[in-house]
Length: 182
Image (cartoon, rainbow, N blue to C red):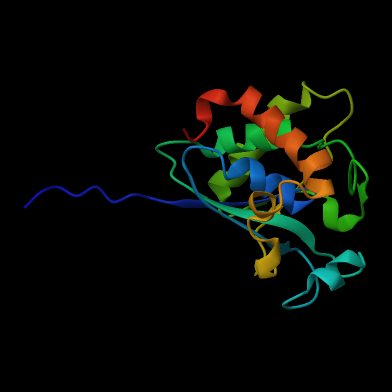
């Protein structure tokens, strides 16, 4: 009987503005096995995009990543996260404004919290302004509507994708070339 290695998959949930941007970047990172756009951190169950857009539900647009820690570490994922969005702007990323666009790390255990605090301290030296990224225990994740999943892959020529998502993807491809899926 051959030894079969069991792959351990971990989960991280991140909000860095519009989930289309974050999803598009992490779909290209080696070791990330899945990326799902969704909502976390609000007061209502099973929110819709229309409800989120009002800014009154308390939810953030997030991505839930599953990753193989033998190929990419939790800390490396956070370093990519802090590179592809501005963690110093409260409830805003570029022209996207509101609590649903906040910078947030939802940790799934105490070890993730510890690592997140270490990475945040390290990344604080990169930015002129203080990091305002929220760090909280992962609440219930609600999968976004089907049309939000793989949005950039399906609509690369759409205006927002061309002018907002594509530049973030290009920045990540340049900064993390060694971590990209071939």
